[in-house]
Length: 402
Ligand code: F3S
Image 1 (cartoon, protein in one colour):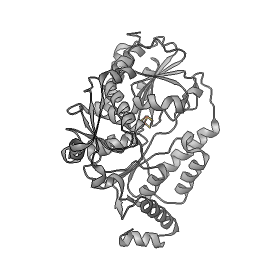
Image 2 (cartoon, protein in one colour):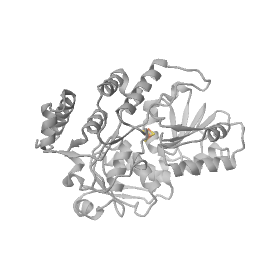
Image 3 (cartoon, rainbow, N blue to C red):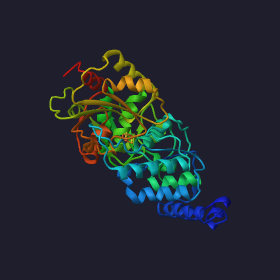
Image 4 (cartoon, rainbow, N blue to C red):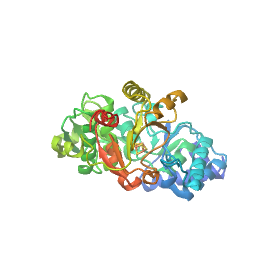
């Protein structure tokens, strides 16, 4: 691999053994993926933060890195952590896990992370053509497909290295030739956000590895596109979907797919088969989850005002609770939290319901507007899941419909 003079110096140990070791790992990974050089990155997004995913050895690795005195050299954000360790009756469980999770979070803060969210594009929106090293599939797809930035779907350890060295290997979708779409996908134009999410989910099943050129989403608001991409990232491995009329340079990137690529479609009946309007089948303790991926400040404010405007304080919510999930950068006044909690609503900041043990918290069923959560929650959180459009979900939570 060709290295700059500075990179050679790091590799040779001129700046110390710890940096040399990290550089050696990065170069090895890059060479194994065919990279000819490294590339400087402007923003790193770290994943592998939940203690349920990384376990004791992962927590110790991050702690040792932080204790070694190294720091991130570029702007770095991190994915959310596990939710809470108190069940519905207020009983604590898994104290050691909580302590380990705290170690992970404090170690990442020591390394230089100041925000925990899976929507890092709301903290710093990437620029077109900028190189990044991001983990977290929804964020990667947003960066590549909506902002025209360049990032592979990185793994947690590699993002830690990239954050410290400020570089990643130049391969995958950092290179022009790997950004060309090869499959032509026609999506039934969604009329609600949850339909866009369901379409993304279904497209990922049909196009699990290639880059698709997607027709049917042009001109839709960003919330539709974000829901589509988050769901697509759950069922596919692709870091990029070229969306007609949206993705920067979409005409150039889609030419090959339009001229002779395999053609796939997602029709309305498939989409509607994933969505529910009623929750008749739901039993037991129900958790409503909105914010997978994390809500923006604007979305959160809208939901809060809608709920406070309609739901009287102290109303009997029975077996249900609503989580509005967002990043740690979003500030929520204590007084507002109190008002919401009297209505069965919790603003969950910096955490991810999917990587938490919801079944251990006493949840039986989750109703969500996230097709990504629909995909992962049964496996990871041990609960049943129902997909509903956000508007229907809120009405249902507030008892306006059955
Ligand atoms: Fe974010 Fe967790 Fe969903 S990381 S996208 S809330 S699965």
